[in-house]
Image 1 (cartoon, one colour):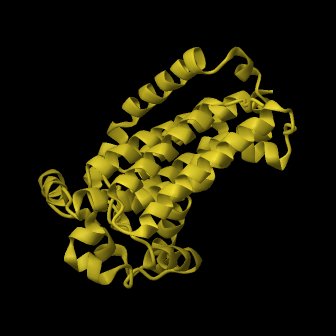
Image 2 (tube, rainbow, N blue to C red):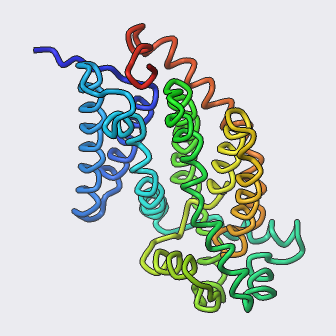
Length: 308
């Protein structure tokens, strides 16, 4: 019996990402654990295919939790993709990085290491620290918001398109991070690595983010800053679909950009490069989406439940 599936453009890019991660883990795995991670990425494609099959059989009613998960399931893997691309870049390059280049670039552009200067000047202000921890925490909320808001308004086709633009942009950055490793100032600058946020006290969000940082491998995925690039793309989507939300969304996004340097996750030049690649990412994602719609997705896929 032939399995009937109804794939969306997001399904296709999710499958491609999972295959990339699986293949890279199998090729560069140095432990059994890494090979198991590769198997897990293959299993994740089973989830994608399962949703596509359920969609084809009309089992997912619009507006239900399963229908929501059918469209946005790839977002459940964003954090895992980010963490594993860091591991892969270390495996491929045996821990080497291009940090020296960007450290010198920071000096040339700003005459100082802003990742050192900002926390030294303001790190004694707990309220300021808390604000930037909150801004950094808000990253995934900011990038999920356009698609979710469109979904809540039952604009399913537009929700899928917004989700695709962000996910496809992520995918291109993931591949780049494996090929071009930069660890960031929190690892490259010995003084910052020794502190590891012990001096940046705050309140609730300080505790949340410091707890996450404490057990995470964050040595990679730095240039260009995906926090800056993807949040900028999310802002563009907000402006396109929900211009009134910019009154709160844009200030929070700018605070997020500053927080990437203040919390010494990035050199300031990383953030500038994150902004610089936004036009390229948008062009690529829009073009990729058009190709998928025209050549790979059948006419019936255009009527999938995610677009009703």
